[in-house]
Amino acid sequence: MNCQVIIYETTNVIEFKYGILNVIGAQTTSGGAMIGMEWGTGGSGKFIDAITGSSILSHRMLSPLSGWPTYHFRFTPGAPTPVATGSYNVGVGQTYPSLTLAVADVNHRGISGSVTLNLTDLQYDTSALNGSNIFQFS
View 1 (cartoon, rainbow, N blue to C red):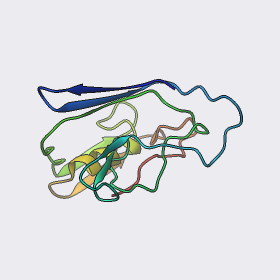
View 2 (tube, rainbow, N blue to C red):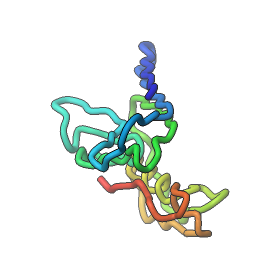
View 3 (spheres, one colour):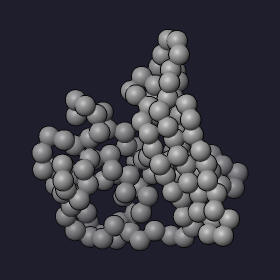
View 4 (cartoon, rainbow, N blue to C red):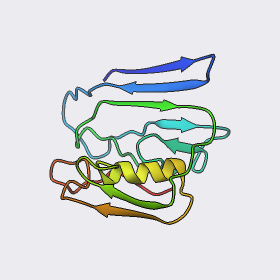
């Protein structure tokens, strides 16, 4: 596996860049990882998962069994703008291409009021068979 962490000292921006995982030997269900940041004493509630936006430490959403994707994440200081009240489409070519990304955005940013997600087609998640979303609520 190749990965890179880039720290920009003048802006306090931190980037994580993960490449493809080359698994040698048998793959097991016990393996997995999270991409994120902890602060203070760490632990649940003081962690943010880059993929899901969750603050829970017990999940390992990245697994060699499900295929290790190439990811790039950027953490920037400050508070994000909450998702505005409204209705958002989820599907191919929509505001959110998958439920995974819609839930991660809500987890990362929060909401300012009522939010409705309209499922527009059968492509609701990032799996080939449309059945393995990788989100977890905080």
